[in-house]
Length: 389
Image (cartoon, rainbow, N blue to C red; front, side, top):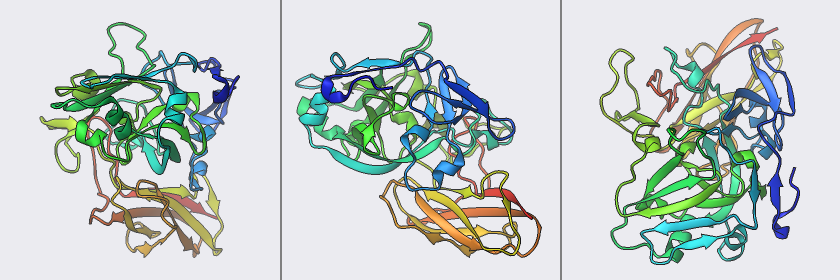
């Protein structure tokens, strides 16, 4: 797929809108294979929305080829010429910058961190009543080691002027029609200058896949992926609050602390989506997997939050009537997911409802009910039904 390496000033050139292969997955699902990707679950193809099958979450890091894909606009980049690509830093700065990928790699300190990237609408298909938008199940997320340059260092090199308020970000993707606003997001200047926000050029030790933002993307640890702008090429420092569709109209949540609202009485006050909610998920047993009775089986899953830290995870194999503490794997980082396990000996054949809930070090726990019109922030106690044979 990659015709020339970075050292050769290469161009990544493969049209990505033509699917190479298509096959059947679970009932009602279609698997597709795009360039640089393995078989992923198709949600939409224009723009690409591709979901990661759960079995890829039975490991610490999500492979690049299996990492989920989410674009907002049909006009996504399919080639990038590294000879001409530049990351522009402009606006309320003393010295505007125009940086090549080689500049980012060679002129700034490289830093790495492990962080979960989760789509704001992950698990939207489970909302009841249903809401519009991409009907994701639980696979619109991934955990990776991101390597790049601290955004703070880039801003310092440009010299932020006194009175600057926010920083706006946009990428190479473009709307197909003029009436559709191009995708752009913003962070407050204080948040942008936090040392963990970065411009990443690698994930899991390799170049970013084209569909995940090659050549560079923004990484905002602990925040929903709508802020992780892909194919980033414009950073603008602003002397006033950013105004744009993707902040002012889209990706809004109720101002209530839990992001909850009633379908009958929607919230009148909203705010831009921000920090990740506390979550836990099952990744094994997988959907449709049959478990033998009276034999040990290891239930597996993951838990994560916005960086406060997972304290414990509890699992019920009895419809929520009794809970057991799961064993937590070692931490991979403040913003990474934490894998958990529970040994289970199903006593008899039949159907069982498994439930899982997580608690973090800030005293937060998962809720029993959540609904909002955007299908965002899902953090209810997760449950899955399994068949023991």
